[in-house]
Length: 104
Image (cartoon, rainbow, N blue to C red; front, side, top):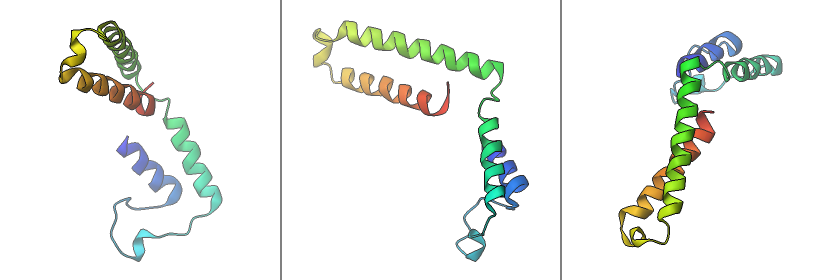
């Protein structure tokens, strides 16, 4: 993803780097049409995942769903007293949020 963003910044915004340099070079005026072109390129790049990446995302969604089912089945059992049970629930929730934000 980093390479795609850097390519878009160079092609559409004419930025040689996206690294912070802590100087005036970090600030540039941009034409709205250049910003629009960059945003459109970024939007188009989003669904360009490989078939394997889409397959992995689907498999991860299924694993998260099964983990949630297991946690729901264990809810109210002796596992509730285990210190690792809330950590597991939190980890599954975090994985779910990551997948929603970065993979689909």
